[in-house]
Length: 387
Image 1 (cartoon, one colour):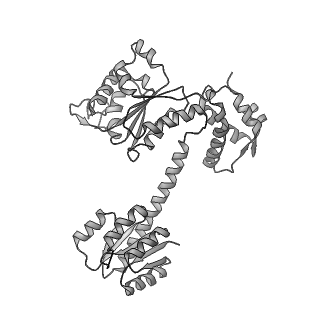
Image 2: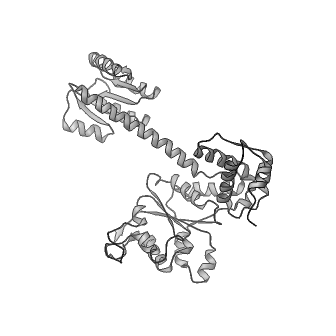
Image 3: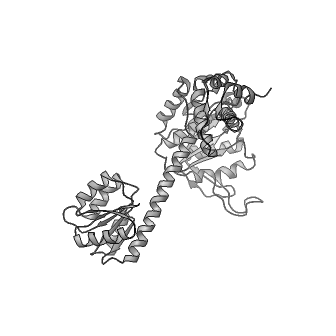
């Protein structure tokens, strides 16, 4: 049952609202002044708060200001018999969900409450989804090698320093980039990923910087590039070692001046983007071979983070296996399977050429093919590496 708090200094209004809302199957608490209402919000989680504006002592606007830090996701509907446009605008600016004048229109009040409840539901669902997503991209491990990576990522995250993440395929370079973003001051901004190896060289500039209509044959309309899409957030350039030299030159200019130009356009567009890059290549060798610009490397590598291979952190396999069993069983909607100690021992004997990506696939295969318990025999049977 949804719970509503009514804060109003007039007893008749409090009681009337209580009767109406309880008839509508809501659970209702009452507070006769702002101070008591604020204390109740601190002690109880409400789905919605109805708050009068004109009250002795602490008025409704002050209650609203003090309530938002305590219960930021609780919709607050302000009510007043002295309403005017300025008061309504001030309430909304300070974070109120809506403003209703007295005498209260019952139909409008109930519709507003239902809409506010819908908002609360969406906020809760979003919070749950964010937790699921964050768990999916969590860095798992307690080995010294991975702890060093996590510590470095957390230390650099609050800054705007550019980061170059190196490591073999499948080691989890994207997870490090996401952690840096999530722990940064840009966490509420977008995280935009570009796989430079997956985009043809003739299209990479359009992908990164966008294009104007008619700039090339298939450019039938204007399009924003990834730099613009990531404005205010983080742009993750994965496999940057595969980027063409012409695109590298444009990226270098964007990093130097925080300005881009769309393909086929001459307008300079200001962007505020933090760039985190990653590569599985030896950039020093790429520079010596003339395939990567040394000046771009120095721009990108303010901070260098190297992600170890799974073979360098075998002690993390028990945690990784348990994590993936839980995650994959949840994704498939099946009861969580157990994994025996001898199964873990067998997993630690494998040479993991595909790193974290490979062990996840192996665990998924075992979950699908095995019974309630995954044993060492199962690992030997189903997790054999390619010969």
